[in-house]
Length: 404
Ligand code: SF4
Image 1: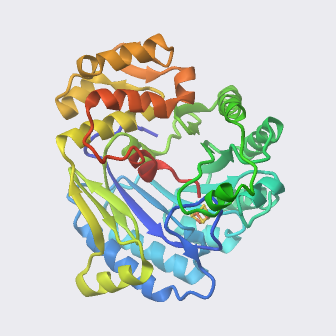
Image 2 (image 1 turned 45 degrees about the vertical axis):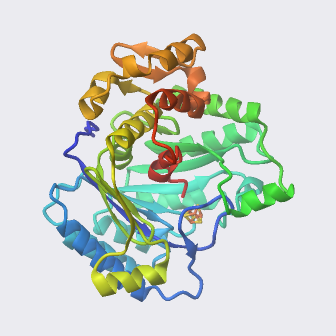
């Protein structure tokens, strides 16, 4: 797949907010499905979708339907939404349509509905192949559900799938992590996303952390896991192209590249965030309120801002430095008018002396050691850019992690 991203690329993000249960580490907007009526949300979601796509002034290249877990939808509803997506995006040159799924939420009929509905890629939230670790993450599925789900996905002809894994789980060992990696690779995904566990505000794991009732992974062990992952996957023919993302040649995630390369993306669903050129918006993070606002006025935007020059520069820096290829200073200047080599000369020199960044032509990129300290590297560079007060570096996570 051609993964060159330009200003012309447009993504469409869809957020379905229901899951079977709430995982202990998850701070995405999702609520347990049990006993909830989905029909009102479905109708509002379809209205939002139709209006948002009609509002696009560029062709949509990629669709990413995440959440939440879209595959919690029952067969008929799933087919209905996919039909609505297809109708709304008819004529758009969709190159990639990813859906997030969890093991134990995929069956043969659902998988057939996905492929008939135009889905080209499945992102499976496996996270670990060890029951104790899945338990620690408060995941519902069992390790044995993972190969079953992959087999079903493959059986309908979806050959393009990602497996998500998490390291840094309390009680996880280097051996158990390496075994999860091996078992994932044995399933022949063409993409893997390997995230370090983070303790986000308000999650169950963070509450337990504060109470001191859970074991936490040692920092050095987590660093060893990151490097073991990088070395193992690279040895298996995967290319690390972003801090947490690995792909076989030609299989980078086009949709996420739109985020990392500061492209435009429309957003549909409760809490979904979009950015069209210089205008960023976020829908209301409440299902009932979302339904009410969509039905009343055709949109449910809770926050909207125009990206300032300073913010654009900061975001460009933060997103591009996550990419292994690094940040191209000529691109940065073209987009922001700022000469990074000049503006951040001191920070670049300090970081290079510390062995954390290196220059490659006109690019600044993190070294192997720098990748372990990515937040520090980005903060140092951002400090020299003089970011506006109140800007949160968390924007990185908001826009690009999936961890379903
Ligand atoms: S991690 Fe994924 S499956 Fe778990 S609650 Fe969050 S969105 Fe749902």
